[in-house]
Amino acid sequence: MSDCPCCNRKLLQHIRSSGVYWFCPDCRQEMPDMSSIVHAKRLSSAMLSAKIGRNLR
Image (cartoon, rainbow, N blue to C red; front, side):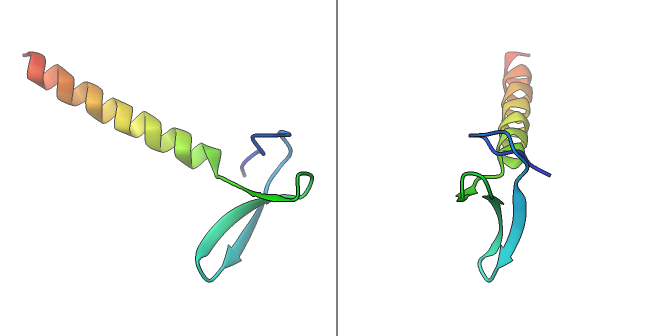
């Protein structure tokens, strides 16, 4: 489960025809899934580091 980036409360997962999204009942807004964003950035950073390491050899 994700936490709201604004108020740190637990987000509710909702499903609609376009896919899954997160909703904060306190902020009453749809929120991004920050854990997925952070994971994707870490993965791309690790891939970039590996590529740079290969090029330096």
